[in-house]
Image (cartoon, rainbow, N blue to C red; front, side, top):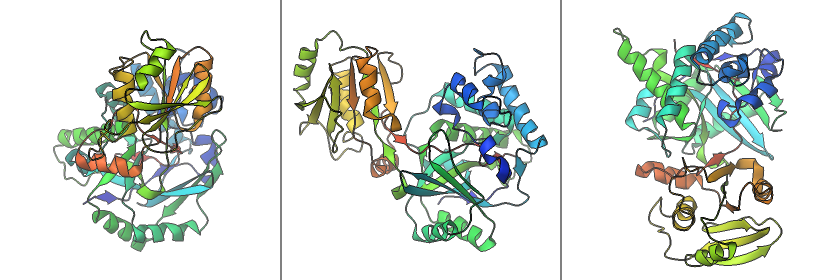
Length: 415
């Protein structure tokens, strides 16, 4: 069963939310954060990208940077730009993209559920990235940014969410950077709070959709604090971390594509010929061509788009990993033909996700920066859940969720 609790959120006054809110820390670099923050001293980037508080070129891992994050978090509270709710609440966070709205419940997720596998992951985490986020959580003594969970569809919770959706939200704005609508409600009714807690208690698992490193860091810091506290009872706030939980069927997963610098010494003709061992290769012309279904890939090479259809026998429908297009392309194209063994470290490959689309793939190849691009059909939420339930791990760079959660709408203090 999944254990959650309401919490006393720290958040901006309604009139300041658009000054404070920001994109998440890991979707932009330091220069972009510096530019977006501009002269807005209320921008959350001063807390989540605190290297912008120093001279350009300062490492985001400089010890001064973590200290600055904590100082800025305190400053935001002292100035009244962030204010803690006096009572514990659940919250609703809705995002609308291209006319489709998804409704998430903001909850305190239980650290022990992460440690024991009730909260399931589908990606590997890197220790250096975990440590970076742990330093940030330790320094601020708070989960400044939420993680992104999915839960099995639930009619009781859906009815509750739709009831709140008919009321006036606490926040309601369209973010200038992405054009998506973001809405936020506070759940203070005791009956509704009890209903949410109980419905989650019936769930055998929750699933990390996005934010594996933030989840790991938050849970590890919580466990660390428990060990350090000689009077630990299990009821302390550090036993929980902040998550926004969406019904699985509402989530949108976009394609996560690859661009490669060279053909491993092959000519274009030799590369296309090598592909024919495992794929049916068909030229599609000059216009952008998107994969239409599972096991079809789009290749862009020498200004021409191709369809690559994986031949029967090259994948295993009974294997939750082997059936994935990211696995097929990694094994049969990137590894077997191009000798790209490690997607996490090989400098010959890069990844283009989400809303950038096929035009970005074409641009990077036409510019000469890359030799070829490979577009994949998106992974489904069912595939992610099947893999997480099986205890297996997806290949790297397999999922791209959109829209991303905005940061700064709500923060969770650990004490």
